[in-house]
Length: 430
Image (tube, rainbow, N blue to C red):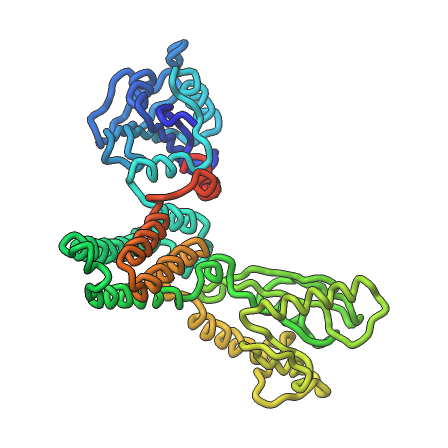
């Protein structure tokens, strides 16, 4: 990919719409504006301009034009925006005109954000937060992603990095001022203690709930024998007919997953095949095997079967279902519900929401994804090794490895494959 290309794309919603925002970024962005508008408006001031096709002079639109000289822009380059009328023909006409200007090409997915990263306008953590912000569907997801995109985690990482550099500088000073013969005899306890303190501070963040739970939703699995009311309860929880309800045993053969937001918290409810000791149906047996796996991976398991048959699970919730029927299975210490009449449903939802709040990161705090947790874990491990090292040269190398892990967090050290995967999550125009 040629980084000196000037790129353009529609950065607003797909037409038709009231306004279509065409974004242009790169060294020829202002030349493109001149070609369409004739003159360049004052920097950072919206100006009304008639836009003409540079090839035949035909009027394309009358739009607001803004230009932002780099590097103090979203991408770190010269940037222009054309606020067009959002009709399909207008947008298509502007795109075609831009495509025929030398040095311009259509942007690829996530290319504007990738240029912002390459030009130091954002780091890798902020880019990941922005990707999550664009994908957020619940208020809880939005607030957490906004904290990451706003640089809260990056600021914390920078504090850790500065502390790490101070420890490395202290060690270098000790080595510089010591004689070769007494290097091994020096007291490095102050540096070791500093490594332990930094290790503990970083390790504390590894105890936070994972971002994947927030992004994908807490997995709540409904399980029990056939005809225990799982599918009916699922439909009541998600407020729609997501699962087929029947009195015929074995109706649910496979996992049925339904994402839903309850009080701004994302959940993924999973209905499973009914569990019983024997079945001559091969498909039903496969369904029961998948149910067992889903139960093992559940964040919360709602058990609708007999109390004594409940599987072992750290977050098992006993449900006394079908409370409207006189012969329903009774339990002790269970949430009593009737999905048909609504009895107990508000209490069940309140219970799920309350426990979900304890399992998810606080809404205004950043949540760490798998990549970030892996690198933080490596950083803490290197610091632990450094704190126990008796040879100062080994200590110095462990501190260097810890710094490299922190640099990978922000993108100071990263691979092209990883960057391609990240920025590929963005839409065209972002």
